[in-house]
Length: 305
View 1 (cartoon, rainbow, N blue to C red):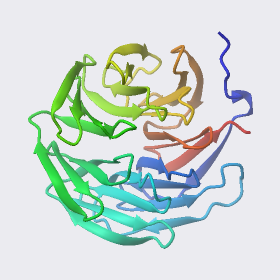
View 2 (cartoon, one colour):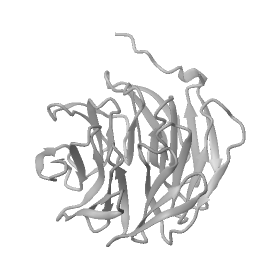
View 3 (cartoon, rainbow, N blue to C red):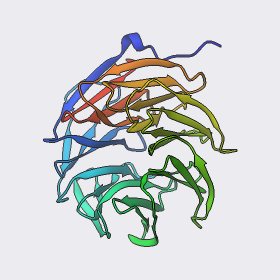
View 4 (cartoon, one colour):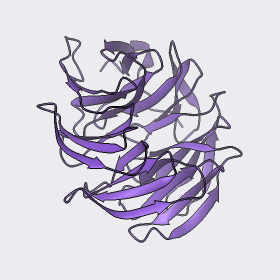
């Protein structure tokens, strides 16, 4: 079967510098016009991006956290609301137009993971003490708190919001019913800790990245592993599906971002990097990939269309 591939020959990249220290997280807003980045330098930034342009990019600094901004996520229904999770035990909500913090929620531990429910009503936060907090975004109040007796890494809802996934240090993925948080499946997914999870925007698959350097692809319908992607040689830190669900990007301490075809499992392109990468995310509307890591810079590559 012929693959309808991005024209990687026309690949171009742009680099944006703003943070003083390494970047832990990048994320696009729901309409693909703004990119947020969170850094060890205690700040987040919003970059206004023209997906087809190469002009000067305006950015706004979000200041207020007193520790590393480890992860951030955009409201899936509002293109100007972004939430940040930081080591200062707070989650902050920001207006991306003004750069002002609109809500500051104090939690119990150093926050490392954050994700929105697809309908925008709830937000899940994981901390270094392996505690999960679910916040009701309408009231900014916790509605669930659960402490786990194992290492909990990245967390995610499926596209319909009825399943909730935890990746764990035991090499398992816990699949929970939502909102009950009852465990439906414990997947023996990898031979080492599972670090990250990506959700196919079409709702068919989820992918898991592990310390064993593999990315596994799972069917949401029957929770079965379909294939693995084997191009990386270091623990997988970050993965993302593109907007059509055709491609998956993954990155690690390997000095490239791998792009593979989801259906064939074949690696079709590698973007060279100067340092280990911490975060990759495809734009929700275009084949535009943002990635960031340990060398203080932000990069993007697109397909030149």
